[in-house]
Length: 313
Length: 89
Image (tube, rainbow over all chains, first blue to last red):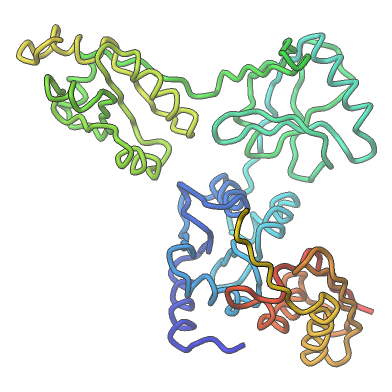
């Protein structure tokens, strides 16, 4: 099938626009399909910077790239003008380590994470490994971008690293992919009772938590013009009574804008006393944001300590 | 009840034959096996000496390029290729 000359030219320019170009659904911050998200995760672990093209925003590119590459699916990765492959192939190349050479980046030696396993957890894991594992099938621990952990039994890939397990004498290994490994360093695995029976309980000290910010610290940050997103989670009625200068009402539209921002953006949330904003902050942590602050005491503390002209209510 | 219209397309065997023909046109020497899987999904095996020395991506691009017409448009007869095996005889 021939491609319209104009579209062919446009895609050619996109492919040549940068050394590494990923045609995907959505963008790097917010991938809109699982396959695109997987490739972004792999590239993010190796490259600080690369170009993405959102095919959902341009239907003619979405159709055109399939013809251009003789490849029927998206995502598609181009490196220095050469088609490399789709999701399966990138995963395979990542597993074998071949991707480092393709991208021309140094292979980073992944440090083996230290994991503490309680005695009951070790017993349960040994049992699971014996029951479901087998030649080439071993225990894997995946820690995703939101620091949610997941245990599974899967084939070992060359890129996997073994965890250093402490706390229990063990007959099994826990494998981690190179992206999960640094996120898993220092975690503990225990068992806990749930309404559905026993389950593994993972405590991860690396998981980002909501941090505290006093109104004095907030004032200093604002005075220094530090780049932050200051979000007011109260109602418009409360805002009419008193507001912190520079704070933006967190409505649906604003929430959607924030969700599209880089995950290391500093978010500072406040409400009346700090309760509602803490809950909202937890939600941004769950979305993968790593720098989320809750203003202790809310605008009430602001009125008392910083700006007596801001009415209390 | 939902007003769902189920448009019957050509039978899977007929689409499989169109896939086979399209690949055969591009690769006349190839031995081609096409298996219908779920509706719109197919598994393809192609054995051809031209694959010799090509990377897996390049091999698969030869086949995907040949059947691009059958996979294009808003509701193409071929929705997805679940497995594509390219082998050298």
